Image (cartoon, rainbow, N blue to C red; front, top):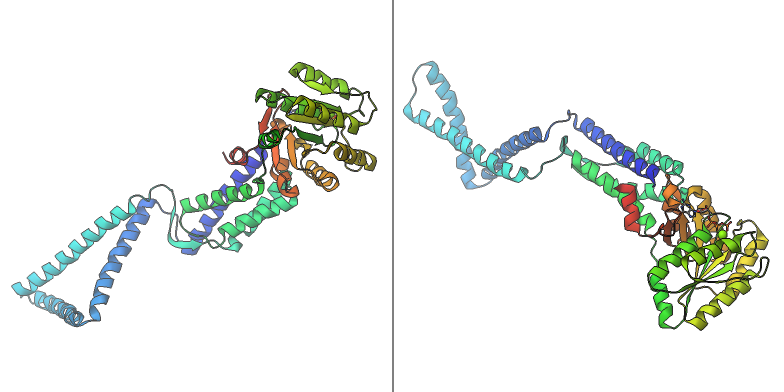
Length: 415
Ligand SMILES: Nc1nc2c(ncn2[C@@H]2O[C@H](COP(=O)(O)OP(=O)(O)OP(=O)(O)O)[C@@H](O)[C@H]2O)c(=O)[nH]1
Ligand SMILES: [Mg+2]
């Protein structure tokens, strides 16, 4: 499921990491070096710094003056020492001073090394590290983000979604300071994951919560399913009837596809198998009247859920779109669900947009996710129309339905 998206994001994370790492190396004008080598260089730098600092600090005050004199004397002494050595005359006093000086510096070096080792030890991991910090710039990301956008479009991600992902990644990464190559891969991965989460986390109430809310008032939750031909509306209704029956609710189905030959028999076959009530009229009768009867039936029998099947229709067919509006007017559904075929990618998103404009849908169910290797529709549809995905169809049997969860979806793409 969603293999193409998974590969695109993983490839992108690797490419981005490599590019920024390479540029950091170039900027620092160094070869890639190991963690141990960095540790050594950093330690040596620290020792030099601390010696320089201690001398520098001392110079400003009165004690500093005497140290300064001492250093000068030391230098003079050393020069003298050299001269004397040349003349083979070495005084004990000079020898002792020199030895003490060296010992002091060695001790200082030892202590600094020990404390730095302690500080540096936990920083394990990464094969490569940089000596200086590198700040990620927009220029570093330009080509890669372009590749990302194209890659997403190839996976049938909607244009506005691809742009939103790219913008979010850019915003997240530009200005980030990195010191170690491990940082780059971590920042990159987090930025991509964060961008996708912002897209897919279109929140809304769950259907179960809505059933419960209506139940308190003694009313059924009325749900109408719409979409173009063959997307999986009837199968989804059968799956949901089975799902809620198992949860202890009593659903009733309205056979409101009175248009297509065999549609009533098809849904009737499912309701018989599942063992629930179906309200049906003759083929060619008014679908709105069937839906109305089903709602009345549920109210009178205290059933909690009405599932209205409707005929598939192209979003461009004005007559059938008007008929759909009539079913809505008469049955007053609490929830209108657009059922889209995830395999149709951007088409599914466009259909959802049109159905939403015509009838104001409340949520989406995407079917055939089990066969969808691209994942573009699942990523895009909720964001584009601003309505949540409620379920995903993941196969052809009754149990093949999954309540949508954005964290689960994120794991599918980034696991
Ligand atoms: N693999 C897979 N197939 C599915 C899924 N949902 C539906 N199908 C198949 O899609 C085909 C069409 O399903 P229907 O439920 O008849 O579609 P529909 O939207 O009611 O079709 P119309 O009433 O003609 O508009 C059937 O063969 C289903 O088995 C799914 O989640 N996964
Ligand atoms: Mg159908």
